[in-house]
Amino acid sequence: MPRTPSIALVHDWLDAPGGGEAVLASLLRLFPDAPVYTLVDFLSPEDRRRLGGTTIHTTALQKAPLARRWFRYAAALMPELIERLDVTDFDIIVSDSHAIAKGIRKRERQLHVCYCHTPARFAWTMASTYGERAASGNAIRAALVAKAQARFRRWDTTASRNVDHFVTNSNHLARTIRQCYDRAATVIHPPVDVDRFEAVGHGTRTDEYVTVSRLVPYKRIDLIIDAFRAMPSRRLIVVGDGPERARLSRDPPSNVTFSGRLDDRQTAAVLGRSRAFVFAAHEDFGIAPIEAQAAGTPVIAFREGGSSETIRDLDSPLPTGVLFNAQTVDAIVAAVERFETATIDGEACRINAARFSAARFRIEFAAHFEKLIGEHCIARNQDAHARQNAWTQPRER
Image 1: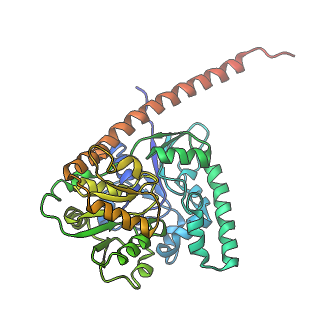
Image 2 (image 1 turned 180 degrees about the vertical axis):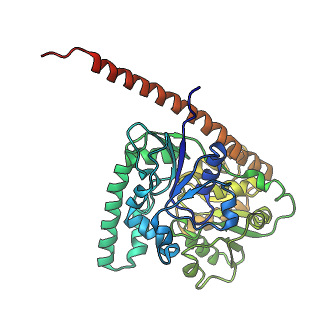
Image 3 (image 1 turned 135 degrees about the vertical axis):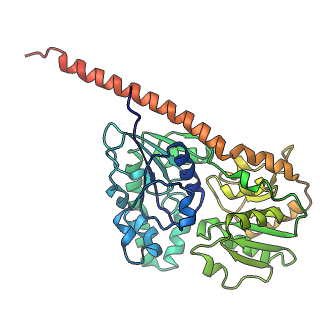
């Protein structure tokens, strides 16, 4: 009987639940015996339980003083940290990566499948945004940041060659992977826990708008807040936490409330009673807008990126939201005004969200994974046969 291939899962880092961690949890449902290799693990016991009882291996950075505060900077400046994790004893590597996981070292005959959430935004698609924030107007600092970003891109391009097959979350991102790495990628939309929202959103809606997000620069929560500053009669709730929290909450308008991070039940309840969900990020896929639709809540979102694949605009027969064309305060204000005059059915939102369920992800990924293993085995057998023929062929003297 042939031996079952051994599998290692590689994840960038574990510090808070998000879209990447949802993919990891689904992969662990498919490969429950696979250990996880990651830069650091700072998950709470509750969040870690969602990953089951898997063994988690980390780098030496895990025990560095105050690493929880600065490990992201280490990952950006020293991406080679991920190469120190040893997965060479496994037959197959499955990485899910938005930064450095794809750079794990592999031996020649291993199969490496990468679910790429995005090429690292701070170095590729949003390098200017991150660079401006990090430089803060200082020319010397700006030059250092640009040099660090260029170094990371060189490393990342090399790391992408360690991957045998890319899988990604949207057609938009497949094009981005082609542009950054000159590699093709198969699209399998990520898993969304739509079932979590079945019980909410069936009652009376409040007049409050909501956004749920990690508070990081590219999410552009600042634009949403400024838009509601310009609409003092409309109220906004900001759910989430992150490094931008202090700056964003320093002088908010009176109609904007910061609730901080809420648990799953509380977040579902807020989404289910809100008037609409507002989303201004140029997101490669965007799970939060789908969660909102699963709660029957329409979405007002920036059109670029994954939103155009997951939200049906007002010109659709069954619209689920309003898309706007520019990351500006005026565009958000105009989109809210369009939404106020529109009719969007909550059931249409739920039906649309169901296309992205976690069960559907596992079925599609498992089928694609089985296909890749079959192709890999055929290629290895052909390679072994070719080497054997080369060895037995008579050599000219």
